[in-house]
Image (cartoon, rainbow over all chains, first blue to last red; front, side, top):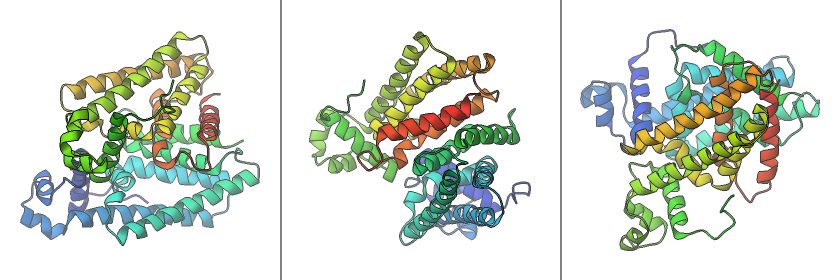
Length: 194
Length: 194
């Protein structure tokens, strides 16, 4: 499912450098020149790989949106209780954040800089994903498997608990991504189910 | 404890406008001129209230750091089990985020733009807070009250679960901040304790 074990493409390397610049300088203040310097290319060579920072942002946002929507479609089509479906989606979020931190970070934070009509298109995908996640939570509450609470609070507490992972988890250090996934899933699912 | 029921001072209004600009344009791209426009002041009048955007960022970061450290000191000095202490700190985080969203948002995201020596000073306060929070979690694990897991995973999952509150919770709408606090505390504490 993850392409992370393969060698990184030039485009991935450029995306990752772009995201670090967006974080450190802000999206608006980042120039193509900064980006060329960060990946040790001349500006003229950079344009062989990417036409603008807007294109990088668009790619990151829509690739991630479709990654999560594809995961949602798969989970919806499987048999399983609502809690099992929530757990499968949690694992998808955690693996995305631990395996592809740079891209998930931009997806979380920088989508506000998309220009129209991309911004509206992106927000519609996001709302669709949230609506379908919420439907699974509600069906779990109705069947008595998931704690009775405001569904929107449950949804956002779940999302938030995983959203900052890219910021504190450093792959390749003492703590493995498998251990993080195991502990987080256990803690979050115990909080959610009755 | 919260000054939010009082009328906002000019400085608070400027801080809130600054934080919205930092979010929308990025800290680096925000100018004092943008800020003056946002609060309907002439640049010359703005300087009566605030000397630079660096000063605004410094105030926001250090005021919040001390708010959390004061809360920690109070919690540490009280009797109570580790789980009760964690719950009290959760409530502090949630109230800060629901009551003072703008300032907590900048505290979360924008501290990276502090200049030295402020940056190191701020990071030391942050590490001190995290170290003390972690000590409470570990003592709860040792006494068997809190689930056995990597303490650093528990710590960051707790912090993260509350960190995006400013982004999705809108005060004054249908969902009250009391209901959000009640549901979040119940969900998160159930996930944490044995």
